Image (cartoon, rainbow, N blue to C red):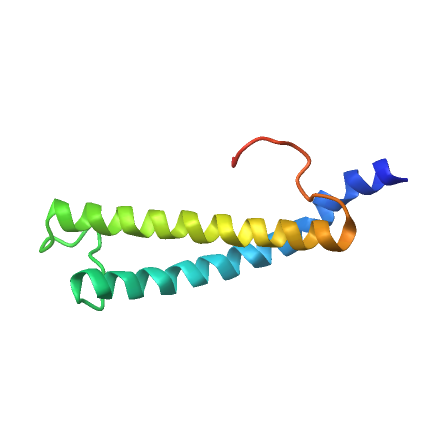
Length: 100
């Protein structure tokens, strides 16, 4: 029975993972806007297609946004996995590989 439970849990975790990912993305977006305002004292980060912005600004914004998104995503994923493992006794990921 435990083996069968381990096979079904990752499938059952997918909707939870989706909601957590969506919430994490929203949280990361808010964190990036606050970080950009603190770094550059601007409300809007530069867009890659903005002709009035230089390479440095655009690449800095992309690097900060990517770093914040990765940290928030990892924290949300790990918190969700630990909560599932605590409540079910089974880790929700079937493999030990990294992100796809």
